[in-house]
Image (cartoon, rainbow, N blue to C red; front, top):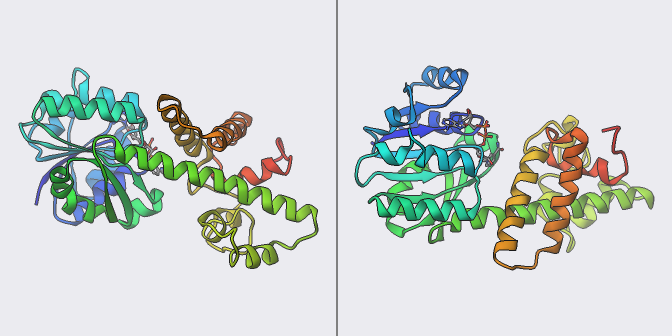
Length: 299
Ligand code: NAD
C-alpha cells in the first residue's frame, strides 16, 4: 500500500481520496478550503497544512484541481509539489486541463526525475463516489502500470492513451463529441415537438436507428424515456453546463493550436457560452434543449 498525497478535495477529489483510504492506502490530503479537509478526515485521511507538507513523505501525488492555472501553481509555485517531493515520486494529475500545460508539466517533472501522468477522468461526481471512474492517462507505460492499483481503487476502467498530454487530448475529444451530440439530440426533440412527434415515439425509433448515441439513450434531454436522466429532475446537474463549456473551450484552444478543423465543436462552445452567460451554467448541460426551443429567459 502506498502513501498518497491528494491535493484538491472538492466534489471529485473528496470522494476519490476517500476511496483510496477504503482500499487501504495512507492518504495525506490538502485543500485550501477547510470544510473539504474536515470531510476528508472524517473519512479516515490525514489532514496536512500545505502542499509541501502533504507531498514530503508521499510515494504518489494525485491532484484534482479546477483548471490549468491551479495545477501549474500547485506543481511549480513557491509551495509547489515539485519542490517538496522525493526523487522518483509518481505524479498523476486527474484534473481536466489544457494539453499544453499538461505537456509542459511532464517536461518539468521528467527533468527533476519524477514519473508523470496526466490522467483526467470521466464519470462525474457519481462515478467518483461509487469508485467507477474511467481514467485516460498520458505518460510512459511504466508510470501507467505503477498507477494501476490507485486507478483500480478509484475507478473501473483505466486506458493508456499514449505519451505526455494524450490523456487530456482524449478527454477533450470525448467531451467535444458529447457536447455536439447533446445539441444534436436536443435539436431533434425540439423539431419533433413542432412536427407533432411524441417524445417516447421519437426515442423508441431513434434509439433503434442510426441516430442512436449516448446523449440519447443514457442521458435523454426530455423527461420520460430515460428515467435516470437529469431532465426528470428539472435538469439538476449531473454534469453542469459550465463544466461542458470549460471542456469545449479547452477543445477549441487545442484545435486552434493544432490547426484542426472543428466547426461543430466551435458552434457547441458558442451555444454553451450563450447559455452560461444567461445565468444557466449551474444547470445540467442537457438543459440546452430549453435554450434551443427559444426559452432563453424562462428556464
Ligand atoms: P471543485 O471546485 O469541487 O474542486 C476543486 C478543489 O480544488 C476545491 O476544493 C479547491 O479549494 C481546490 N483547490 C484549488 N486550488 C488549490 C490549491 N492550490 N491547493 C489546494 N487545493 C486547491 O471541482 P471538481 O468538480 O472536483 O473538479 C475538479 C476537476 O475535475 C476539474 O478539472 C474538472 O473539470 C474535472 N472533472 C469534474 C467532473 C465533475 O462532474 N465535477 C467530471 C469530470 C472531470
